Image (cartoon, rainbow, N blue to C red; front, side, top):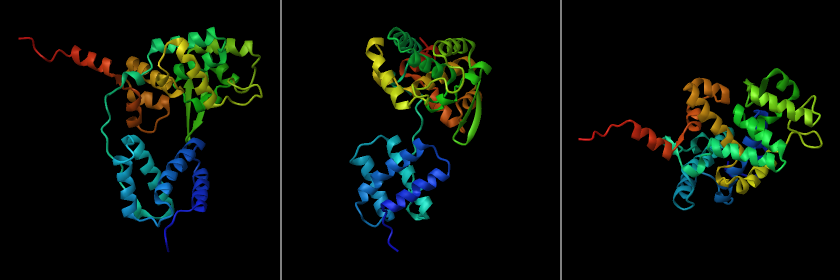
Length: 283
């Protein structure tokens, strides 16, 4: 039987992922990454030689970053697993995690404060509260819908995500600000961050609104997106507690290896730490 990937296979695979209770974002990512392989095959019957050729092309011709290439390969391998084509699976590239991240990718606490101030000054109070809520709790932007009037009153947010349940505490200062916001907007029950129709705010709209603050806040827009607020929470939390396991629980990670990515410092900070070690004697 010829192994040619067609639209019906992909459609069934999408249904399979949905039944596996994968998130909508994860399903879209897998299917989008898989389309790159399908485009490369261009109707040809798939075999191991073609998959290896595809892997090589991603690196040598297309010039993708290793992290992106691995994402494409994982999507392909998961599909092969589903199809029972174990012989087609290929290894991803092994990359040692860097201990620091580029300066232009790292949102500082000072820049975060400026974003909040500018949002309030522009009258974008809901956006200011969203930014503060993500950064002060470390939740994902997709988890904002768990912030309800009842959870604010209890100071506890129960989050269901990726087949796991965790409880997040609200800092006292954030709780007070949320209460004030709820009072001003007549929110007594249900989701706090909602649209005029009462639905949870859309993550893409949040992203766009955050980008609009950058120029007035004098912050590089490459640093400004919801997930970077989660990273800032992680670095500050770890700086205070130095407890990787607890941070992993707070962030909702299954693996501490994932958490390690969140606590990278900037190159400047890393260099400062090296200089403080004084391991080059002055003779």
